[in-house]
Amino acid sequence: MKHLESRIRDLLSASPRRVEEKPAVGEAAVLVSILNGASGPQFLLTRRTDDVPTHKGQISFPGGIRKSGDRSLQSTALRETEEEIGVDRNRIRVLGAFHDFVAISGHRVTPFVGVLPGDDPLRPQAEEVAYLLKIPVEFFQNTRPEIRILNRFGADVEVCYYHYGEETVWGLTARIIHDLLQELKLEK
Image (cartoon, rainbow, N blue to C red; front, top):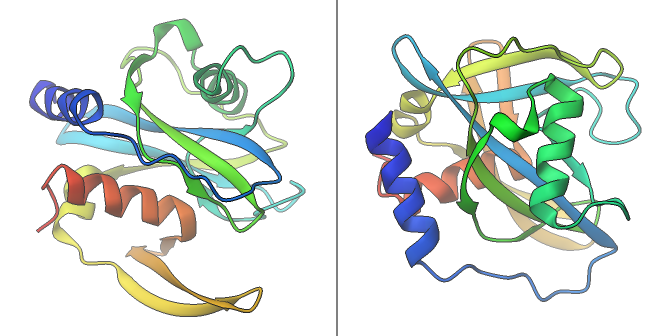
C-alpha cells in the first residue's frame, strides 16, 4: 500500500494537472478513496440510492457540488466524503488532485486521491448511499474496460465500463480510475 501511495503522491505532485477550461454549470469534487484491504489496496465506492436527484443507482466516488461554505474543492471532497460514508475528514490523507473532468451534468469535477484510515467505521448515509463497495485496485489494473461510443447531447463520447461481478462501474467514475491507472502505468 505504501508503494502505491508513494507512486500516486509522486505522480500528482510532479505531473501538470489538466485543468478543464470548457464552460461549466458549476464545480464539484470527488475523493478517489483508497483503503488498505486484507489482500491489498481497494477503491471504496458508493452505490447511490434511487432517491437522490442525480445519478440514481450509479456507482461513484464520494463527492458532490461545491457549496459556498467550502474553502476549496478539496474541502468539498472531504466534506462530502464525511457526509456520505461517515469518515472523519481530518483523518483522510489527501495525496493530491488529479485532472479535471466535465460530468454529463455539465459540472467541472476535480478528483482528489485520498487514503482512508483503516480503523474508522464506515457509516453510509442512508438517503444518498444504498451501500458501499470495496473493489481491489488490482481488479482495475488487470481488467481492460469495455469502451462504448455514446451520443450525449449531440456529441459522440467514449464511455468506460468495468464489470465487477454483478456491479458495473461506468461513466466518469470509470474514466477517472482508467486515466489514473494509465498515468501511474499500473494498468496492464
